[in-house]
Length: 106
Image 1 (tube, rainbow, N blue to C red):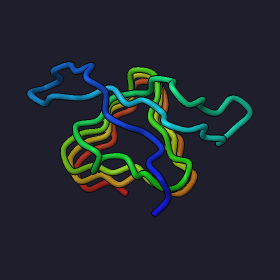
Image 2: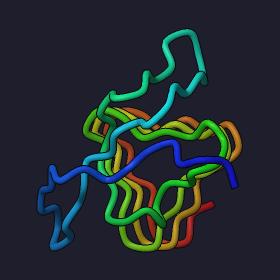
Image 3: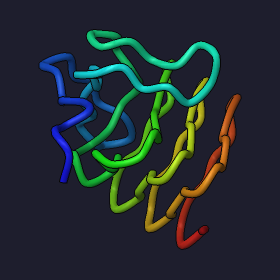
Image 4: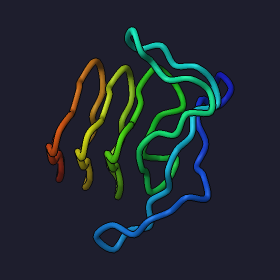
């Protein structure tokens, strides 16, 4: 596996009974013209199991991924979107706005 692309910060918040950590990019991630720069803060995860360290997937803004949900591949989660339950978001999926992806959605 490549070196880690992000880490969990000490910035936390409670959301629907879950403790979420803000993520921070450890290296540049180029998924579009803007991408993410090393040191940039991203969205929120409950654990490192929620966002793959591989690929160019990213969570930004106030987007949240928690429980057993996963984001992988080149997927991007942003805005106020929430992904939870056993949902898997991957490939080139883009989840924006106030979308909610949950349960066993793939």
